[in-house]
Image 1 (cartoon, one colour):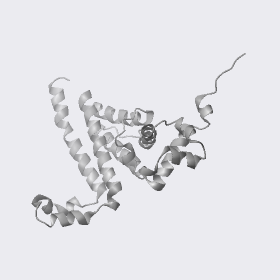
Image 2 (cartoon, helix red, strand yellow; image 1 turned 120 degrees about the vertical axis):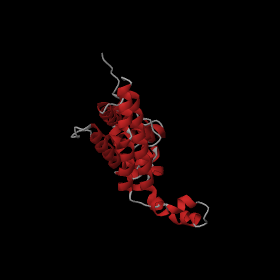
Image 3 (cartoon, helix red, strand yellow; image 1 turned 45 degrees about the horizontal axis):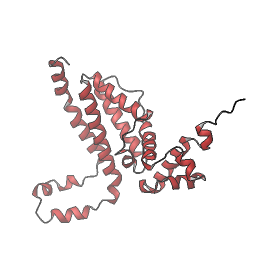
Image 4 (cartoon, rainbow, N blue to C red; image 1 turned 30 degrees about the horizontal axis):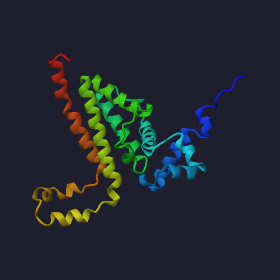
Length: 218
């Protein structure tokens, strides 16, 4: 006589993908703060324990949401040149964050070791290694690119609520002369151009690191 236990997902009565999909719908409708285990359960019409089967904490819920957001980044059909590969991947990563309301806020602060996130990171690091960076440089450059993208997208997604008048009033006091000279550029919401500018700065430093690595024989 066999008495097999039902599969975990069958016992839960719900697939994890359904939980993540519901969470992302709530995210787009109401923002990051509105996403909760209870809100997901209400949307799906199930008990909270059913959702908790797949995401026992809010931190775990944020991880699987983050992986779904980042995992949408395509890592195929890339240029042959390593630096163009990095550029294309980074632009795609940014678009994945922008595809969801508060997408960058969800991903920031997580340390996800899920398939989608690891696939994207692997593609970026591989491109950097192909360019001649040693492993430590490639890993840290990947982090730098990710931090930059997350930061600028968080600002971009929060910009509609920005109180620019407050900064204008503060600079009008004359207490911040350097910032006053650059004021129009500090308030510039040309995020596409700013993103390209920052990415160019990062990529333009890499040849010197590659040269140093080759000289040292690493």
